[in-house]
Amino acid sequence: MLDAQNVKKDFPIFSNHDDLFYFDSASTTQKPQAVIDSVSSFYSSSNANIHRALYKIGETATDAYESVRLKIKSFLNVPDTHEIVFTKGTTESINLVSNAWGRKHLKQKHSIIISEMEHHANIVPWQMIAKEKQAKIKYIPLNENGELTLDALNELIDENTKIISIVHQSNVFGTINPVEKIIKIAQESNILTLIDGAQSVPHFKVDIKEMDCDFFVFSGHKILGPTGVGVLVARKELLKSMDPFLGGGVMIDEVTMNESTWNQIPLKFEAGTANIAQVIGLGEAIDYVQNIGIEKIYQHEKELLTYCLQKFSEIDELKIYGNPRHRGGIITFNIDDIHPHDLAKFLDTDNICIRAGHHCAQPIMHKIGKSSTARVSFYLYNDFREIDYLCESIKKTISIFK
Ligand code: PMP
Image (cartoon, rainbow, N blue to C red; front, top):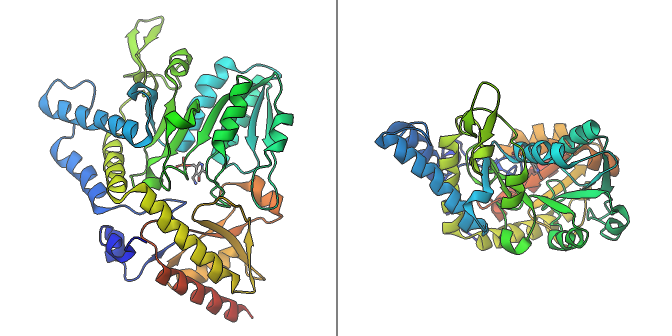
């Protein structure tokens, strides 16, 4: 186990609040001082626009920004830095693919396969482009454990299937999906794959080369980085063949009154002034995670998950949704006769932060017959003591409602 009390010392939010019990890292993570300092130091020491300034601080800023591409290449084993595009987050990355790839390649009767387990960010962009192109969306169904029923995938695939877009780790059940298997099945039929890594990259080792997907996306703020930065990793030849998503500065080669030509990848997809400070902050966050070790973080969360599942099983009124065999540190649940919003509000009086709602995954809520649930999610700064405190606070809330 990691020494969470020690880890917490790196995160100023925990010293700025007496006893903050933060169980909502699947929503966004807290930020280490090093990340906050890197953002602040960029603005105070080398603030300048990138890829254009011909003076020293501009070069420093450009180097700092571009060095994060190299960090991501090494952290995720991406074949080439040209395959790494900075975006605003997972949501924008998927919209980039659905617009820039989808608008060009999807036609009437084509189909897109997603699953019943997706976050809205991996549903709505596909619905929008499918409507425009009169394409179809098909869903891999969920079983009662909150796992994908892969047997159904072969029946969903036909000659019109163009892309399979799947979440790596569910933000509701914590299910870690067998994406390697799905990618192999897709490749046998020449179908592209997109993997939503919003909940995987921060929590366990991801190797893009080994995974061999066509598109991979994640958000900086869920891996200790700033908000407003995310990543799309895509095969070089795909990025080259796609039209731009947003037009403007940086993404062009030449602009005349009548038409424009495009910059090389990845800048072809980074129109306008980038989120420079946020990208630099993301680089610092990746350094922080690598210094601790992603495998240690994974093991730490696994122990927290096992402990919390055991503790939750001792509370009769608590019902957990999903029981996937392969899962990360996320538990979704409800308490008999207590609305999850009421539960969250009561826990908040004990300085406990949990998520309550539909978790931006309404099709899952529909499937389990609930409009909302409560959710706890763990990260490297949580420990057993906090889980004990959480369980005591839940029991106290139950006794108030009795
Ligand atoms: N996919 C998954 C699985 C997520 O958990 C989230 C965030 N909750 C997103 C996509 C969207 O991420 P963002 O809001 O950072 O774009």
